[in-house]
Length: 250
Image 1 (cartoon, helix red, strand yellow):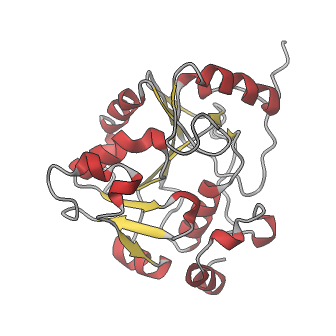
Image 2 (image 1 turned 90 degrees about the vertical axis):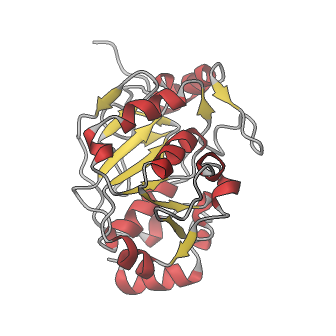
């Protein structure tokens, strides 16, 4: 049997392939180690996901501020979903966009990170727990994804931290469906080192298909593992959020 590529080799190959279809970021251009890019066909992935029963049944959706999820955010606003977001880097914490907060016709503007800031409402974790109760679906972009359900490549760990905070506060749990969105070239069956804080996903959405992962890894259940945060991550948690996390989260 042919040996699988390791994660480092796969990341180089994936990013080389991604250059052929990626859309540059206004700040980071094609520096894939700094952001999750948009790509040709991302709107087709949105169309696939939004026709599923799991999306239709989801009343509250957490969507990361990744470039490839702009059309999903727009459609979720049009579909009157309650959307939970963070800003990039989680430096300002969590925000909620409830149905009716975005004027009709402004959904496309609000799908952009600069645009959504005109309409979203900041929420502490305590406020968010009272406002939304349960998060039915979480959708994140990814630098690379394995069919086993592990994301790898960029290494910042924002989504893992978001899961840790939301799950510790009881807003996300085993019934919350976790979706990873990426281009087909970003899906690779490679050997990766899985850490105790890695948040495995349930489904991969690409421009051409929805793939259920192999569910090989349990979801993290230890909350925020403070000593394992990447350098600079703790400083990016707003002080009020950190105090509440330390008091209420596991």
